[in-house]
Image 1 (cartoon, rainbow, N blue to C red):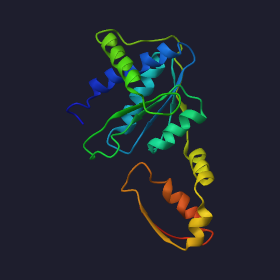
Image 2: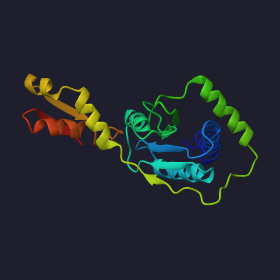
Image 3: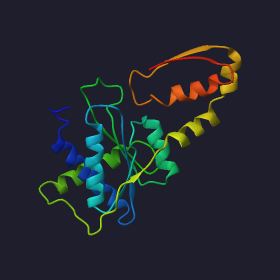
Image 4: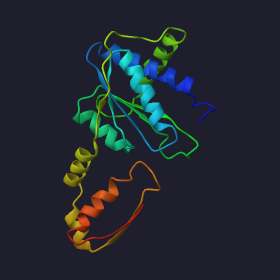
Length: 197
């Protein structure tokens, strides 16, 4: 943060990503914008939303911090044309990063990253794109659909019958409000849960 991950560099990356998206889908594209709880996450999401809109791409903005798998799942469920996720994953808090996911919800592969890098170079020194009647950002809350999917693939009954005590601490990470909520819900049927907030 503030060394390589600066406002100027984030803007450059966002222009490159957005130009890549419209090269794949010139009209009607929509991109999810999400973040983890790191410093300035909301500011970076607002910046991404503004740049996407300027190119005519509809931003689907997740207001709260969300885990990366949730954002990936939301890409597929909402049939978005990708996702911009501000996160440095497992890195210490003084870092941040940008992950771009493609329409299949997967991280951008090297060939996509190279195209984005080329778009960054092509955009450097040019004026910002501005469309007449830019699309407004739309809110997206993927939590419910993601937790619903987890209930389908995690056998809570087996865990419940095992009689285990679960301690969950997200360390103020993006998973807070996700795993602990799922575990608390299971607690209603007899599982002993200690969720550290």
